[in-house]
Every structure is written in C-alpha cells, then in structure tokens.
Amino acid sequence: MTQKLWEKFTPFPREVINTFKKIYPMKNIKSATDYFYNFSKKTNYIRTERIEKSILEKVQQNMEI
Image (cartoon, rainbow, N blue to C red; front, top):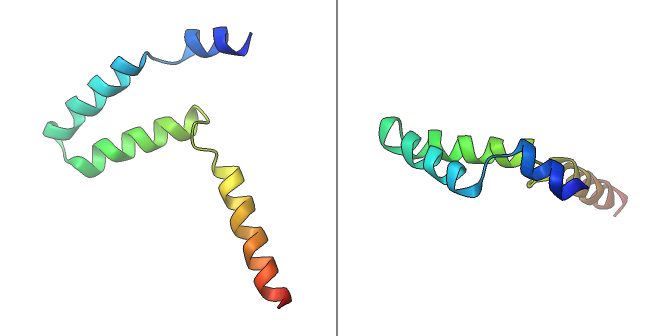
C-alpha cells in the first residue's frame, strides 16, 4: 500500500535528476543541491527527526559525563 502511494505522489527518479540538471546551469550547484536536499526531506528519504533525536541524545550523554 505504501509503495503504491509513494509511486503516485512522487516524481520518477529521472524527473528529479532532470530537475537537478536544469537548476544547476541556470543557477548554481548550491541551488541544485538545496532542491535535492529539500525534496529528500519532504519525501522522508532524509529523516531529519531521527538526526535531531540522535544529536539530542549525544548532547544529553555528554552532559551526564
């Protein structure tokens, strides 16, 4: 079920790549990378909440020492 929803609401990888390739020459590599990073966060490919949780746990562990 999740896979079918994923396929309907996200662009094909080739579309993401094409968008990246269009942004890069028109603007710069930072803009293209920002596009890809934000896309990855929105589609939960990069799970920022897990990263934040991991960082918080490390900080808390360091404070206990």
